[in-house]
Image (cartoon, rainbow, N blue to C red; front, side, top):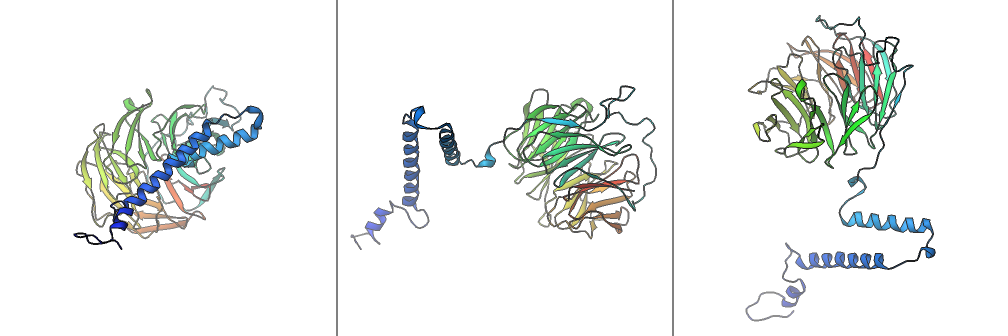
Length: 425
């Protein structure tokens, strides 16, 4: 050990470590960076070597090019998931005719169905199963208004729309994503809908023709998508992403109009409230933030040490409350007005979600709350007493979503990761 006057320790070791310590190993870091620079120089020298076309077969040239492309992508820190796979959009119509004898498309609701308010009853029996997805179903949505069609998002990368009142068959299949579809959202008139997928793309579709109108991406995973409910803002939608941002797009220009970036985790839900002037968002940071639409500064933070993440939120039909699925196996209720206060008297327990984003629901008359669970059961609670009213075994795997029909108000549709959609009466 080389010792010097006025120095404590091994001077040679200190010089070898280039002044670093056990806490900051500067020498190892610089050596690693030098090795990366050396490999980069070798790759550039190799790529600059001229190769005659006659020396390589086309297969060999393609293999070498693919190898260099993969190495370059790895050096830049991009894996296979870092690039969006090119995907051609298409759709298949499964009906007999595009239009009936009166020239109406399948989007036209039956004339004998009208929206009327009446008392809701808990469904007791299974009446139909829609099966067409080869993998699990992630989300389902009723066609706005009469609910004569049902839109479903599948983990098989496909979106399907089903007839509810007549043949109960699949009317059209929309194909255009390279990975599972996470969320879907209808426009107010139902003639367009949005999809977001794990391929990092959001797409706007024409419901009737199956045409992909436009595509959007910020190269981050979109977890939820929502149109602005105002009729004069149907060109605006919001997307909650894995990079903690909520991105506001304009479908007319295809550009990002605003970014809301105050969350500390991936954004899971977006819920418009107060006549659509504001919206609430929840994320993996276990917070709920309230925003003024168009202003990227939250007006209220809702957080508590005992609060859990809320991966699924549903607004009640009377627009007064938000039902929030908590990962501690309970549904909590927040007011959807100016105060956005937790209503501790309206907590619904008993089911087990165990990390799944099971979408809660409510009957149109506001008397019953419902939710699926991990065992494929559908739970019903009485709104006034918060007591369990009934449990129904619906699916073999997790029941991820349940929605009450807007017209036939004693009927409920459920979907599951077992790949089926079931209709209950």
